[in-house]
Length: 146
Image (cartoon, rainbow, N blue to C red; front, side, top):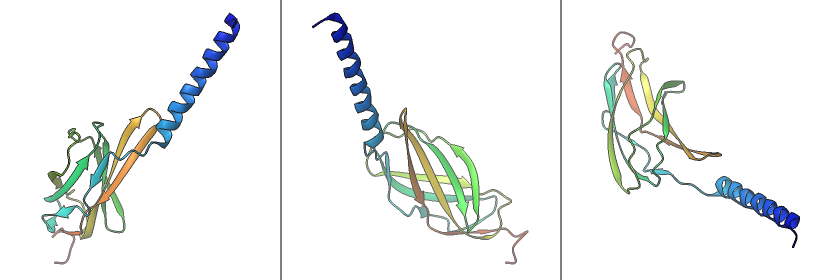
């Protein structure tokens, strides 16, 4: 084997290695988070500006911290600011209770919460986990006819 053939073989082997890594990153069935749906609403009736309490059980299967977007949905989608939760790692049957403040300007009506947690699993792949809450009612005495 000449020196020239050795270099060519190394280049071909390296290319195959990168191709294999690319396909692994692309096709691996990541499952970073499992939520027991629907997410339970502890306070089914709240006033705009007050807090709604949500409770849920989940299994987190990764140490990656997601970026979470949260929306209030009543037919119209009201996006709330994104956030990154504290990193709970690799446990099963985690129980969480969150307190979410409803914006004071929210119109009255029946809503549910919609979350999208985006996990950057590797440099070329993001996995989005979506989950929903039970319905709850928002009252606002300045706008609604109660």
